[in-house]
Image (tube, rainbow, N blue to C red; front, top):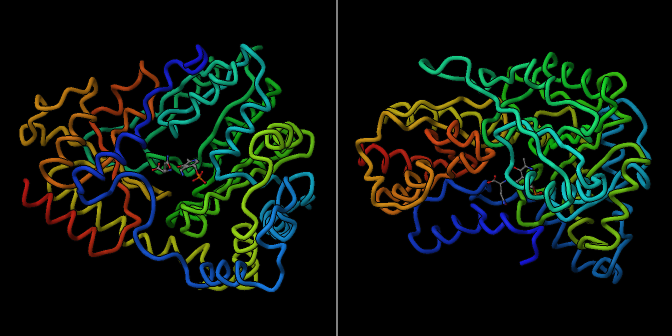
Length: 412
Ligand code: PMP
Ligand code: GLN
């Protein structure tokens, strides 16, 4: 492979999907629901593909299907309290992945530095490097490690963050709610990041794919709404996460036209356009949610309400077997420290460099429960912070969470 790709050969998603196929464990690994997507969303797609309009199965506008960019502009205009231009301030992408890729390709010159808060969704690092940029890392660290933990206990050191900014800094990537910890960044933390971004005149890329998965009393704050921040922020979202349709791979980026322009240049020469029927159906789904926006049935709030008991059930059964979970304020993942159980696993049977890889593989093969090794979400020098933990996904049917609880109890 070409030099610029060296170091990107391994992907936890590729490797662990293989494990699922081979050992067929109860899969609490990669993040996706194991239950049906909302009926209205599926029906919208069925109706679209069989509609009388032949054009709905053909190419649509490259930067986003008109019906979809219009409704996304309407929704975020309301949430940001400013008017977004659907044609120049929104780009529809092939999942949030492509929004991240087009952002980092479109805004990186060789040598530009991007600040990443660890643990981070793993593709940020290779995307920056392939674009010729340099990632700079700052870890979140737990404030106390003895009692029960909340994701709010995982914090960055303010001075350490400040010290990473310099004249080569291009921007900072924020992910709130965070994958894998579930941290929902507080106003104070976002204000601190914003002040630094303004002081150094840099970009903020805000990955908000879990924006609707926030558990009371936590509140999702869009950094683009802070004073002077819209001008320098590219915000990324995902229909996969918003509507529990991760297989559709429709995402978006929004921000000021001058910043979005760079993404358009990348998108038009790589993906060019995303699937029309999927965009039409996502547009219909958004229109329906906008109609019931203030109702408790609105999927934007009902999904999180339905997930909260699943989160709490998982926290309990992990604690019951002796793990120390971090209760997430958002997202659908939970990390748990498993070191008290180290005598119950034969880590020497596995050959991986990092303990959490050995733990998760051994568990998949011998206990039948699959989680993701969190060290994958850290730079090499900080992987040790993730190694004592495992990440489990809880957007699963109750019966499967109960099965996981039984398997863990039996093993313990
Ligand atoms: N960002 C984060 C934080 C994620 O967890 C994911 C996982 N899906 C993505 C981006 C990519 O989203 P998509 O499936 O829409 O490409
Ligand atoms: N975001 C999901 C996760 O963290 C999916 C990852 C992926 O599709 N590569 O599990």
